[in-house]
Image (cartoon, rainbow, N blue to C red; front, side, top):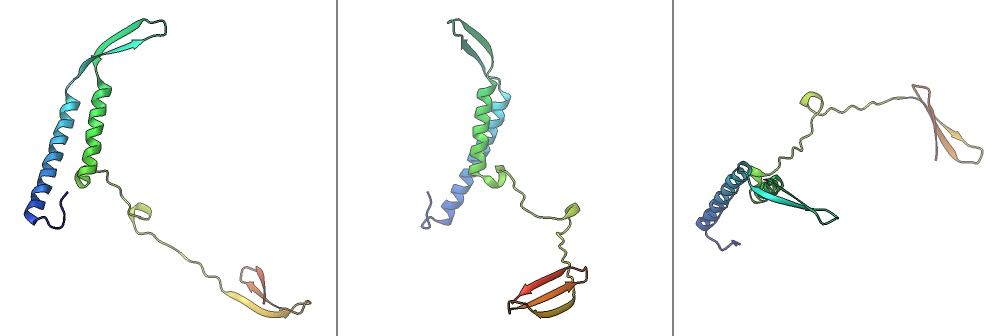
Length: 134
């Protein structure tokens, strides 16, 4: 609505007006939730008979409150929006810790295979033998 040509004073007035609008919607939400709305529900059966129930229209009030809450979360998300926490932490809220295990090689030797290619065999401290062909 307001572009880069708007004056700072008019932008400030607009922001203030939007905050006031949000406060009014929040007050309406409380009013709708606190005020009973008496109405009639008519249920028609397959045989044509009807059942009329009179009472508080809770579903209608819930819809009105939820709509206002959604509007508030979109219009003024810093105050009325859902807070999403995206921080990462380790155990008990501490820092994330990483560990790296390095295993040193005990023996390395080069072999000439029967097919005429070279292979390197590496034996680790744990006794594993790995053969790489070159």
